[in-house]
Each structure stands twice: as C-alpha cells, then as structure tokens.
Length: 158
Length: 185
Image (cartoon, rainbow over the protein chains, first blue to last red):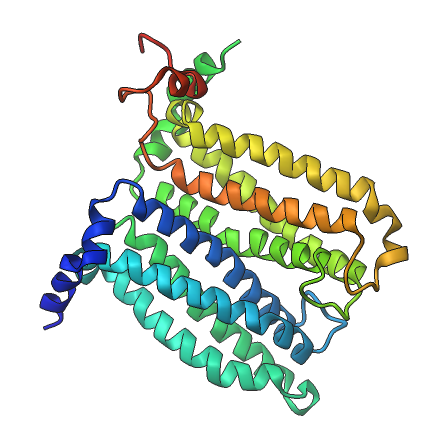
C-alpha cells in the first residue's frame, strides 16, 4: 500500500541526488553518527541517573533539565539526516524488517520521551517511587536500543 | 619495516577467516562497536561540554569528571576490544585504508590531549572546580577532544568506503598514504 510512495521518494530531487552522488550518503551518514553520539550521551546520562548511577549527587530533575536541550537538538539532526538517508533508498527500506523495527521503536521512543519520561524526570523524585524511576529508565533504554540496533541492521540486510 | 607481512599472516589465521566469513558474528561485533559510541563518545561529549562551560555550570567540574570517567573507561574498553576484533577480521584492507590510518593518528592525538589535560590543568582542579567556565587550558582540552573524536567517528565510518582502496586506480599521493604495494601477491 505504501510502496508507491516509498518509490516516489527516490525520484525526488533530493533522493535522486543523494542516491547518485558518490559522497553525499557517506557525509550525511557521518553527521547522523555524530548526532548519535550526542543523543546517546543525553539519553544515557538521564537514564543512568534514574537507575541510581552516574551523577548521583545531583537531583534527577537537574540532570534531566541540563540534558534536555542536547537531546532535542541532536534528535532534530538525527531526524533530518535520517530522512535524507531514507529518501535515497526508500524502496530498500520498504522491504527491510530492521527499518520497520527501527521506525516503530522510534515512534514509541519519541512519544515516551516527550510524555512519561519527561514528566517523571522533571518531577520531584521524592514524590516518585524508586521502582517507577527505574522502570521509566529501562523502557527508555530498551526503546532507544531498538532504534539504534534496528538502524545498524538496515545496512546489513541487503 | 612494513607491517604488511604481519597483516597478511593475521589474515591467514583461522580466527580471522572465521570472523570475516561469519554470518552473524561480524555484524554483531560491528553493531556493539557502533552502539557503544553512545556510551563512550556520548559521555566524553558531556565531559568536554562541561570543560567548555556549556553544561552543568552549577555542578563542580571535578564532580562531573569523577562520576563520568568510570563510564567512559567502561565504554572505551568495549570500543577497543570490538575495534581490535574488527581489524582482526579484515587486517590487510584495514591496514591499507587511509581512513583507518587517519583514525589511528587521531586516536593517538586524543590520547595525548587527555594525558596533557590530566597531568596539567586537571591537577589543579580544586582551584577551578566550581567555576561555571573553566580556565582556558581546560577549555582548549575540551574543544580539542570534541574535534578529535568527531574525526575518529567520521573516519571510522569512512573505512567502509573503497574510494581510496589499493585495488582501484589511485594517485601517487594516495598510494603512498595508504601504503599500497605495486605488485600485490
């Protein structure tokens, strides 16, 4: 049902240019990877803190507030570069299971991060049960791991 | 002088061939290498940004350094082990790859930068720990670290591309930099 739209993406000016350039895909992918390091750090720092590791002397909300702008900014770069990579090989993505795993995880991760996780991490942690904080961290880590692992595996699947 | 014979011997070992030809092990090792980027480089970025005075300005720099370095070390160990395994699987091509060579040079420079920081301005951290913006030498160390790790990440990704491989027609400069041999055995 979606296949014609995916095929159309590749015929757009940007999709066509990236696909036929010898270096564009590599350069965009490099930026995607650099942003991965930043978003990884911003996510891990808060999730580790929710689990009781890392910056233990700072409150969860202080760590979450500091990490938030870096998370949002790197997510924007990830989405922009990710979309550019996608349009250059949309048909391949359509047939790739890892791609769909990644997109499902990504949608869930974004919703979870901007709702539950944001609310819990910015709240006064003394009002929260430790088990809730840990659960939020584990869900976040699992979802983002799905995004990362799925992303890497797109490249391995034909 | 060349390490090529060593790489050729390494490539002929059973473990190297097995890893190179494995259906799942090689992708798995590479995935661990890439995803550990989040832990190692991600934590380094936070530390470097604190040295630049861009995050956690109200938290003493020494606190960030002490709490984050154990996680960086853990990530680094995984990076080195998986990185060595990736080289072990494809020794000759990696050795003759310009990006691999650049990456190693940048790694050495990043090591020197870290050593300079820890043996220098970090020793006096008690004097500047609570400063929102650390002294110039700490800021330079942070900026240098960010730049070098960016180069290392990008070079690492570029190793996969064959633009400058020895088995393609190359300019003399590229051949020299990649250590290409005229008549491959």
